[in-house]
Length: 134
Image (cartoon, rainbow, N blue to C red; front, side, top):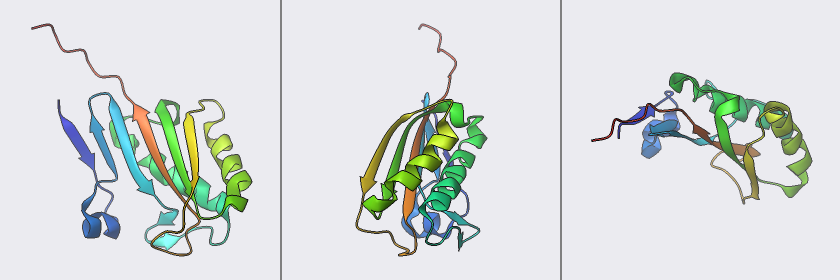
């Protein structure tokens, strides 16, 4: 099985030593993704907007594999405040309305950047050619 890795140039990828997305067989995993674009936090203080941006970033990590929103099997959303569940859920529902994945929301104590309210992970499925019988 071939393993493919995608990096985005995020300074965190280099500092921590991770890839934004990794594909192995029919599965593609997207690492925890924050609402940062070119190192700039989007939606400061707004959990809805942060969720929209983080999900967009995570979905962008699927594009090198030819995948999109309809290929997502599971999402994990990490929140710093339980009070933000409705706003985060609304953003998630808007993105995945026609292709709802299995989803988990977890409240955590915080992130590396204290302004971040939401981080997301994705797992997606991709069709792989069947290997011939040997």
